[in-house]
Image (tube, rainbow, N blue to C red; front, side, top):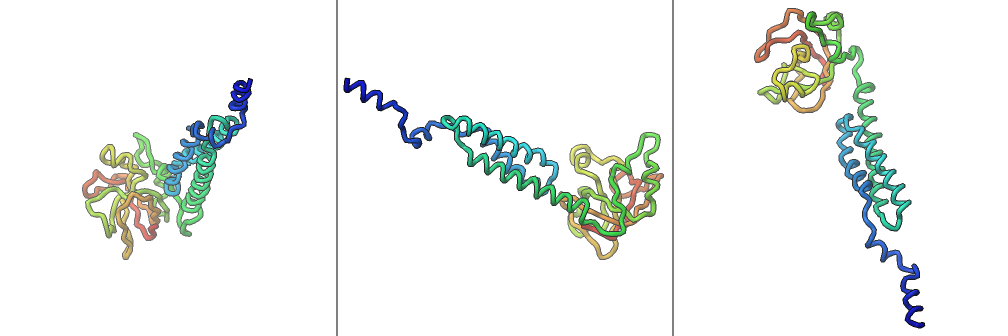
Length: 225
């Protein structure tokens, strides 16, 4: 009788929770949330990673919910909460920075122009939307086309992205704007997106330039950011 009583007491459930801790597994959702949150910090420089931050937040909440429902088998709530906090910070800070750069931190006197307005059709390479901008003060956002000279540039080609020039040769003619900086402005080559403002000149007959087929658009720039 005494042996049976001792056996029942040993499995009565009155066990120190610390003993169970070593048998619980870390939630994979919590790990993924934390990993995505770290990646989402790059969103401070690239708004395109916003979906990564959102995924980190969603998975973090899912992890917290799953852990609460399965306390005996899962752990990692702190990791999930850290993922939520970091992803939320990246989303808020990255979005705020993007809105400030794109819509608030703009010089006065320039018409903000998207490269899409410069895109033509096979039968009309230079569209009417571009012709209407000839001689106007505009502000373009884009990247400096890779060039042999890397510093102290006063003349270069601006492109909307690096997809074409880095992976497919010369960009489309309507994706290139020749920029001439007014003295004493200069820029250095980088992979950062720039805001450049000035007077836009449209050349429907294609202006020949060194090392490239030519350009339809020329920007006499007096503002660089």
